[in-house]
Length: 66
Image 1: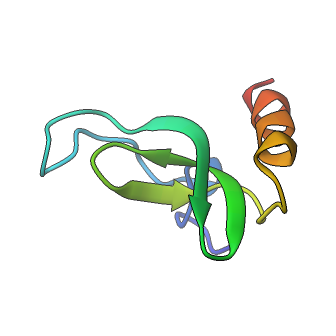
Image 2 (image 1 turned 45 degrees about the vertical axis):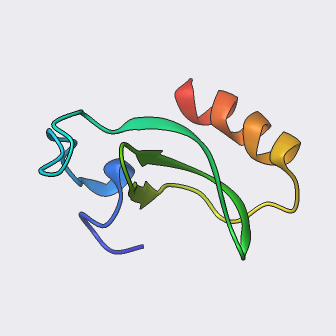
Image 3 (image 1 turned 90 degrees about the vertical axis):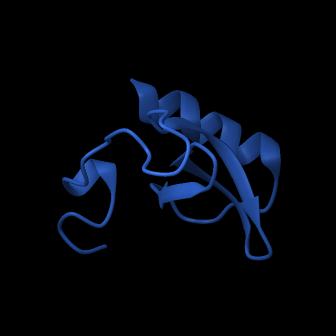
């Protein structure tokens, strides 16, 4: 990942220009799999690699928050 590409590498969580909310972290999914990232009305970032199951990504979310 490039500097500033993710919250972990410096991307700034600001109020969304579309919905006015601040992005929150959680488990998300895409055709590539499940991942930990930030979103509000749309995905903001992907903070982890892709996982094969929701449960694996959820475990990563717990570790990511520590």
